[in-house]
Image 1 (cartoon, helix red, strand yellow):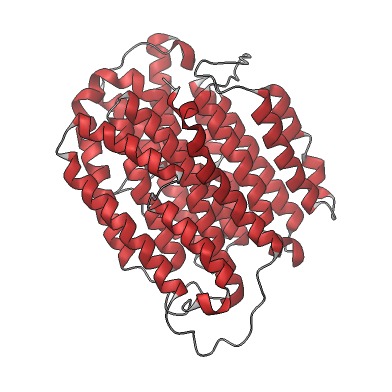
Image 2 (cartoon, rainbow, N blue to C red):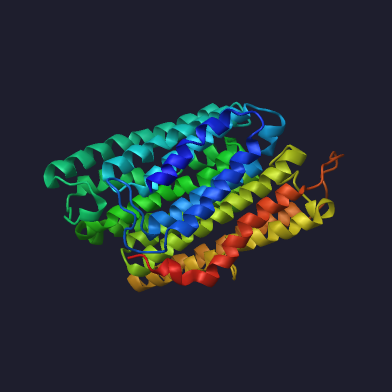
Length: 445
């Protein structure tokens, strides 16, 4: 595990060389394939060192981080073209990848917490430094304070656990905790990060103000940190979880339904995709809260699928934004007349977002629906509406952007480049081919 960390570390000088924008992208992609071939889909911890290790969950999440970071560079051509502090951008991205890698491969709970919180800093710099409107400062403050408010209780809970059991190693954390305050302090940080409905208000703001790269990494990987942390720690809260998980499960399902309704009345494309992320992560959270095998595997699949799908949708909205200079659904109309081939990608990614076959989202939703219905058949009612409205807002997004009358004061545009098509293909292909190897993702216990 350390050799990959060293590779990321030694890439720092590459960020400072003026002509090296695409070399960085190549290195990230190479690192992805090296990591893919170097480790196995093993549900046991492998390659264990003193504080780094890798099991199936961290393996999938690290692969997702490397893939999305590589695609972020590909999507941020405008930063390179305008030379908009591109070297600093590469450096921030590299540190973000480093923190994500260390978060997902940490074997120690305190080290995990440290890097979990550290990943906030590069994200904040991305939003405040490369965002579009002056409101990005407000979005940054929202993100910072929501996250920091819950991080101190988590640290105190970690210290309390260590004082009681003298151990913070994930592998040996077998002591069950039945303290309600401990449960709340430890898990609230993950609920905010996911985000759970009621503590989700920072997410649409952050997405709307962030540059395309910020939105991609935020939707693709940073939301998954919350799910990852819950999946790691839920097993020490089995005793109390059985009693009170019902509350959070209900909030996340009901919240997912309300957020889906909010999606339908959005006029900002990015805001719509951001709210759809809250709805999807609500489903993931409710799956984890069942503490069942189906729920955990379904949550892993859904996190991977959502990471690729929403990242691809943010790329698409950015392609429109770079040409029309607006994210409003009222102005982004009739695009099928201008870019018919891009219309296909809008349809493919919108349909994947609503879990149409053969997308990976479908597998995730089937597994999560299985776990929730077996937990309580009343969940069927909520899931029915949730799936229906998921299709409604996805098709609403597609039909409003592609059909209708062209915006009358729209007079010129640049055609889609090969780089942008490749970017979309690299989001869509893994999203729809992974379902052919779905047995790998059912190994995690």
